[in-house]
Length: 475
Image (cartoon, rainbow, N blue to C red; front, side, top):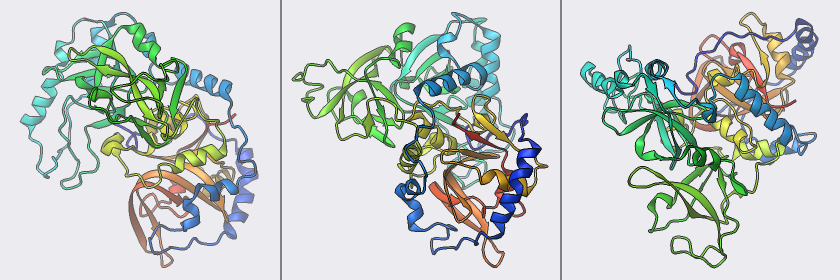
């Protein structure tokens, strides 16, 4: 399933006992003098108004504008990810034909029949007959012995689904936030390889750089392989550095009207567009002229000009990876609704950190389960046997941008105050004990700032005790 639900894998790496022992004494001393965070009226423990401002955290950095990784180091890390992480896909490296058995296995692994009762938005149990119809629409048996991949570009933000259906299903009747058929989402300009079509012809099973799942056929424009794969590397370009940006409204090319582009999306800039030549009936001098993919009526690809207002939060290249920029980029999502698997036109915990880092040109795996163990990053792993003192010692070394993983969730470090580590994360909510020891649940459902140390994973275990790994995007 999509992020915040992945199972933690075996942890092959741990800190040396010597380092932990050296740091444990420092952490124990710090913990002994750390005051307990207060609980404001909004019930989010330890968070005051100052904590919700990126400038507050930037001001606490000793060298806020230092470059953590330069362009060459980021490129090298992305190459390591491509070479060593099995959760990412090199769409350009796919062979001309794939064995049908391999494709059937890949589709079947994702679209396997549910083994538990699922409920629709009205709280009614989904019948076996309805599930059978959905499974049949995947048409796995119809996959031929040899599959020739076709290539296309995503033309608008679109959901990736477990099955070829729009039916939203849930584990509990009445709890309609987490759709168990929602996997992720793809963004305009993402290249995909099309491997299979649903029985009703309305869906395609695709491989994208970070995920393989079902997407509606109407979201893909198929074209020449070389044209599709070259689109993402065209230059000059613009990178979306705001949470989102939208093309201007136009009545002439609906596929390019008010099109949402999310943080980190890179689009070609048509710098040589004639200064006085209209784009879809509008003069371009107040906008950037960019090139975007469009799906024609026959499903084929066209690359057409569109206008992006000059007021849009964009840059001519990926941003420099510095503490200042990490904080500013992450806080641009503050308060956005949590969206499981990129539902609600927003994002979830791993999508949030992925898109923040994507604005610097850094690629991360899609799911928490893959991010947490990726061999391409600078990883610290924990075992259940590691003590609280050992864990606290490591927390004292965390820096802005470090990613902290617990089963099914990821948080980004934004700084420390009075011995408490503060995080920004896209979360359904937090649990902690108040001054009287009572367990308190604050339902957040948003990108939020919280302290780490007071949080409880469940009624018995502090969150710190359930940290599985820390990933550092730094040398």
